[in-house]
Length: 294
Image (tube, rainbow, N blue to C red; front, side, top):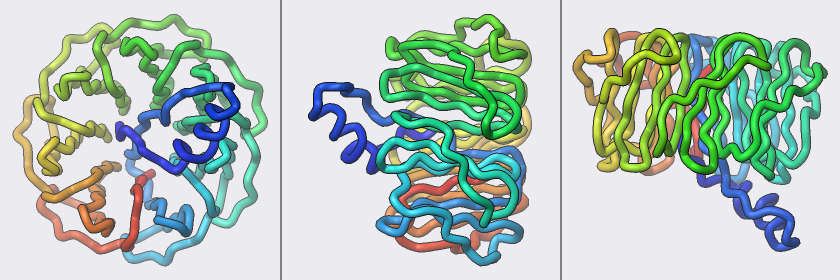
């Protein structure tokens, strides 16, 4: 989960607020994946790029004027600066399908697509890109998807997760939540006080306190990654009580996907490593605003 400060805040949201329509803030969202081989970046001024394959594969320019980029399997989703959500499926140069207007966050997982509207309504669809929407909940500030789980954080800071069909019942997870992350049977929350907690198993499993002083929490498989308020990127592998390994310092963002770890450092350079926690970094691109892994 990364709390975004994106161009959407000064385009679609600012414009609609000026008209007195809505004053919603940009949403938090995960930037981590599920072991895919795609890497995506949002650059300053040039839009969204994605590569597929090895860490040194060439980049494909996907779209300009993008505020959010999400990757899942062979799907790519973008949120434009004007609040339009688009998804493509297949190759990197596939055509876009317009999903919805008036959006402030998009989420992807498998054959599910989720959107959070400017008015705080969460919708999810399942199946093809043109499948119908199911309204999940109102008063939402963050939406997350993973497998057959859907998670939300409400405007009041309550985290809820459901498992199964789109109309399954919600389970209340925790209050005082700033951000939520889902991966497989793990649920992670970042509290408003900067504490990271993760649970594993059922929706009502017990929480394990992971770390204090956290500004970003990411989950992927059996890895947990955090960015501390001091700018240190830490990752653990294995059980919830495994030891932390510091993988980078002076960090603005961390992302995880399977055996890959990605970071954006203070000067805007994006790096990704693959393999063990102490593997060497590969420089991906400069002038990066945000990094996403599939």
